[in-house]
Length: 329
Image 1: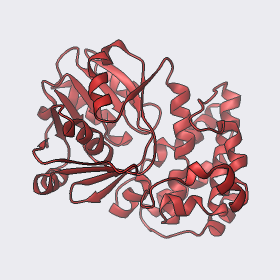
Image 2 (image 1 turned 180 degrees about the vertical axis):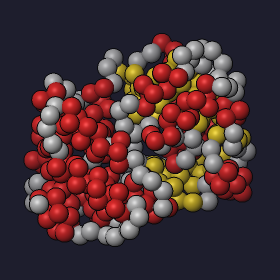
Image 3 (image 1 turned 30 degrees about the horizontal axis):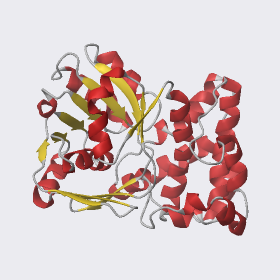
């Protein structure tokens, strides 16, 4: 049995795809989500036209729902990782495999510290999932599931393949995590723009904001001796230059970046819409922490952290020009 622990957008989508293709899955999450899924079931769609339904969903609201699971997919928000680890430690059987499918860099380490009798694997979900309400979850961008290579995953590879979410295993996932984080530096920009991803990235001013955040992070990664993996056709070190191009050149040279579902938005936008705390400390905040560890500063990413913290209590929309001026101060 597979359990999804922290079944929100990503958890319901990944677990739902597995359940829709015949894998037994138990979802563990909030009572609100449990009620919604009980009323509507799960509907899983993607930008390529997939449309799957799961009507008989096993959804639990307490940690005991994960008891007896052989594979646990942890999809809680990063700030809740330590609590989730303690809860899981009280119910999981020895030898169970736990995969962290979360944003940020350190979640698997937090899980590993507390789940000493289980196998903890670092994973990453590179695509965007939009919660459309009524049990409907939509994958709006491309990408496969990335995981640290581990023999303990072998029994589950076929199930993920059948679900249309194949596992890409890496000898070293840290460079992949940093590349995903570099892309996720757009999350606060998208959230502050209050626009769908495609509309935001179609505007040069917003792209220049992202280019500034990425260039700052890449300089720090160079100083730290960390080389991010290449996830896109354009190497990450060249991506800020591409982002700065005029709109017509960007569309010509990087059209695939804009080839996303017109409804796709970031999870940070969803969090602000719902009045929830965001994961800003685990995204742009990681760049700030890296700078501090090197005795440097990261003013662009620090400003984005500050703007999102302010937006968590006083929401406003920023035009590209306004946001760019704010970051250039």
